[in-house]
Image 1 (tube, one colour):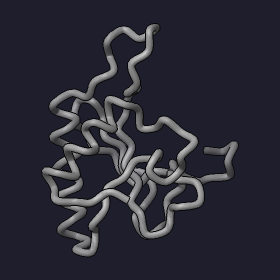
Image 2: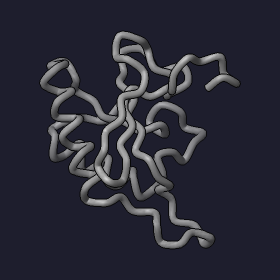
Image 3: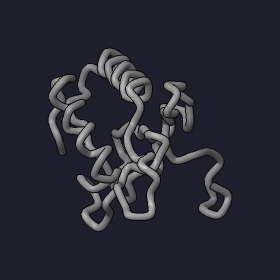
Image 4: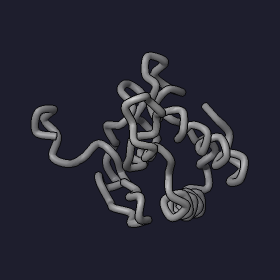
Amino acid sequence: MEDRGWDDVGYHYLVHPKGTIYEGRDLRYKGSHVEGANTSKVGILMMGDFDHNWWDFDDDDLSKTQLDAASKLILTLKTEFPTLRLLGGHRDYKKTTECPGEVMYKHLKAFRSALKLGGP
């Protein structure tokens, strides 16, 4: 954070694999989570590494607890912000990244369907 001149993390929320939701940057402030596309967006970080690589130890998938916590968070945000219509990952806005990883992106698509949200 300090290297970038930030006073806080770039995300508004962070979701731990055990389901704990941490508040990051206050929602009153624009996040720093998608370079060049942060305006009118809420940044949610799913803590973990969600790409399968040969050097991984099969720790790439999200726990059910983490997925449930994220789903509840997004539902709460939809209630708080009725104009919320889209759910996207980094690669939807910045085509030069693999983030949020193949494993997380699969779940992102499922969230869109279950929560009746579109993609960017």
